[in-house]
Amino acid sequence: QAKAAGRSRARVCDATLRARAQEDNELALALRDAIASDGLDVAYQPEIDLETGQLVGLEALARWNRPGHGPVSPAVFIPLAEESGLIEMLGRSVLTRALLDLAEWRERHAAARGLTVWVNVSAGQLEGPQFAREVDRLLQQTRLPAACLGLEVTESVVMGDASATRATLEALRERGVRVAIDDFGTGYSSLGALRELPVDVLKIDRSFVTGLGTEQSDYQLVTAILAMAGALGLAVVAEGIETEAQLHALEELGCGTGQGFLLGRPQPVADVEALLGRARALVG
Ligand code: C2E
Ligand code: MG
Ligand code: MG
Ligand code: MG
Image (tube, rainbow, N blue to C red):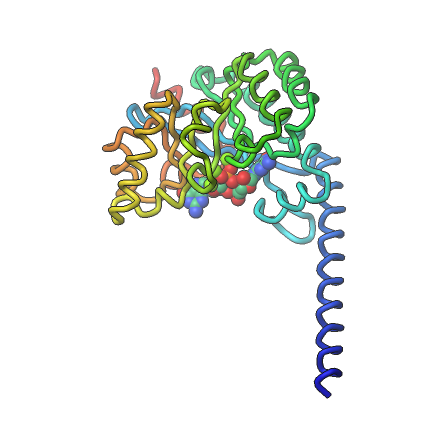
């Protein structure tokens, strides 16, 4: 009897797994269609200079509104794209869109001249030499200076020993493209390794920002990260600022740049236009 129960449990389990695999497959096919038909959108989240309050950057974040289903979270479709070989295609689509958008904003708004657009890049995009060529081609096509573009990679990507990846990042930095470590503090970067990395900016992960203003330990950790970044000559962006208390703590600690729902949500292109129009009015 126990055996029979075990078998039937195994069957249920099998069926569940198969159903899930099929769902993933369907989702991957739909995602491929969406990318191929230009059906993905890009939302832009402001990055603010915490000393001056000025808009200094925009992070491009992929958005997928699946027809007949509604929005799918990037936490779902980005890993799916990585697993199903679609990430290069997706990444190219987001990078192209972001650079084309920035080129247009720069034509229309004085406030867009000093902006950097930050694009998230997965490990799978950086392995070959084609990514750097792609970036070159797009910068030429849009006539944007390389310094307008920033790439966000996670710690594991730059810390890994994939020398091709490092070579790609180094080549791009030589042209003036900036590189940020995303979600900093959640990986395993050692101090020694950090010094050698082809990196310009640390983005402090939201999990460390959350307790600022309430948790003494988070305050101390962020203080330590800022000191370390200063010693290494790296700029710092704090992610996920949601409250005034967090913002004030970061200002007090001298954190250069901030990002988060309090300062601005990820927003569609049209809203960025409006934002840039207002920014111009402020500048004069
Ligand atoms: P990320 O690069 O660390 O982006 C920050 C995420 O935190 C975004 O989620 C953003 O909407 C969210 N966020 C920003 N401010 C706040 C805040 O104050 N509070 C809270 N609770 N959340 C905040 P999103 O857009 O869902 O993206 C999730 C992740 O998906 C990104 O994390 C990034 O790793 C990845 N991703 C998004 N677009 C792309 C892309 O085009 N390519 C690649 N490779 N990855 C992408
Ligand atoms: Mg990011
Ligand atoms: Mg991040
Ligand atoms: Mg994060």
